[in-house]
Structures are given as structure tokens and as C-alpha cells.
Length: 393
Image (cartoon, rainbow, N blue to C red; front, side):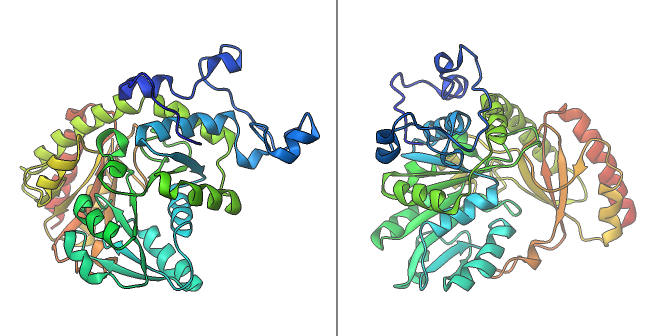
């Protein structure tokens, strides 16, 4: 969906509430109704041959998908946005739009593990090589660039270990070498981080997470600047990776409350992170908004807020201690993904994933997503779990 000019320069909350609704086109309905359909009829041969009709086929767009694309495009201040069925499909499609056989991609070592698997198992079969770099590299990334390097892929912060990449420094190097920068912005969303304004070319979201906010649908978005929009749009069309109208309706529903949810979850997550720093069995809290985080200066410079997810490193203990902690939590569920109204935990082992820079932080890592529960109740639940962990050491 091509960018719609924000003629009134409306603030974020207003954009989220009003963009993409077009009630006059839908019998006055406040929300765009679900538009299910595959075949779309043409009134005349001229419209069929000239492609002048607004909608042509179910795979290429409908009012339900248009609504979401318009919201995200304005939020990102992008040239356009396309929707995909999942966050991983958004990542893979964005990469395919920029790479061809013989090219090379540089990837931050802290990225989402399925991103690594796509690079290692799919891109490699297409003759595209991948090299990983330490996420704190900054302008030193220039030493890694070769004539084959076409893309630098970032995830800031990484969704397990929460290092930030210095996007403005990396972008300065990338522009000099005509390299595209792609970034996964699912953690902060465009509410708190604006990658296109800092030098990125393509921004990717797992809409499954914060955009949806209810843990009941999957989706992805890709937003591009003017230079990359046509290639993203064409790749999206040719691969057929479209989002269903029902899913788009649920993404739009979630986006309407994104600002309120993110503000509440950010505050609770920071309060919980600060509280965890004081707990006996917690060695480190990995949250960029805390002054103790090594990348806090980058956070203060480039971000206006923080996401709902962070990690803690617990004192070294056998696996039975982690089981004692997580198996008996009352409010925190254990599962993949994040972004919903319910709090989650996920034990993880980044040392088994990292390849460029060894993860040498000893202890057990636990990722925490903070939902919309009362933070005092969450503290009580975690405190009991930490006591069980301590007793099992």
C-alpha cells in the first residue's frame, strides 16, 4: 500500500485510531469489515486490460489488508507496506527482495533463531552466503564488507540477549558501499524506534507480537523506503505471501490499542526489571532501558521507549532448578512468542545459537514478557519461583 500523506500531522494515538478506516466506503461502519473473496469481477474489458480497477484478485489486496497497510505505512513514515502470514515470512520475503545468487548478507549475531535458519538453510541453497557479526560492532562493520555484500540485517535489540546495534553508524558505512539495511523492529515498534529515519531501508515486524496484542493471530509486515518499495512490492506479488482478510481484521483491531498497551507494558516491564536486579539469585538483567545495560547510551539516543520483553541471567544451577521455577508459576505462562496481554517466560540457551561472538555470560537465561497483569502480582509470582530456584541449587 502506497503511503498516504498525514496532512494534519496527527500524533501517534490519533493515527492509530483513525488511519485506514474509511467509514464512508463501508456504510458508516467504524471498523473496516472483513472482505473475504478470491475472484473480483471487472465491469469492462478496459478496466481488465488497463489494471485500473482498485482491486483485481484476492491475493493482491482488499479493504481489510489495505486498512493495516495504511496504518503501518504512516507509523513507519514509509513509501509502502505489504502484509505477510507471519513474522518469519516477512523476514524471508524482505531478504529475497534484495538478494540474488552470488550475493552475501551480514547478519547480527543476536537475531531471532528462525532468521538464522532461513539464512543457513534456504539462502545457502540459492547461492547466497551469510556471515554473522557481533551486534556491538558499529562502524567497524566496514572491515567485513566485500564486493559481494548486498545486505546488512539487524535486530535491535536481539530478542534473547538484547544487545542494541548502532544503526546510524552502520547506516553511514552501508550507504557508502550501496548496501541495503534491513531491520526487525518488532520489540520497540515504530512507536518507540524509527529505523527508516535512522538510515534503514526496510523495516520488518512480526505483527504476531505487539501489533496484534492478543496472542490469537499471526502476521508480518514489511515497510520500505522509496528506493526499495517497488522491489518489495513485486517480490510480495510474485511469491503470493499474502495475509488473509480475517487475520488482517484482527491485526487492525490490535493496532488501535497499540499505544495504550505498549505504554502500560513498558512501565510494568521496567519496574519488574528494576526489582529483579535486587533479587539474590539474579546475576544480570538484560534490559536496554536500564542504566546497567552496556548499550544504554544508544537506547537513550535512538529510542523513545522500550518493549515488553527482556531477559535475566540467573546464578548457575542444574536444570532441575529452572524446572522448579517455571513449572509452578501461576501467572506467567511458558511459551514462544510474546506481545499479548498475558505474561510469559521462556528459558533459552544463547550459547547454542551464537557463532560470531561467543556468549560467555555464565548462568541460566530466562526471557520474560510482561503482560497487562498487576505488576505486584507478577512480582509475587516470580519471587516464589526464584525461591524455588534457590532451594534447588
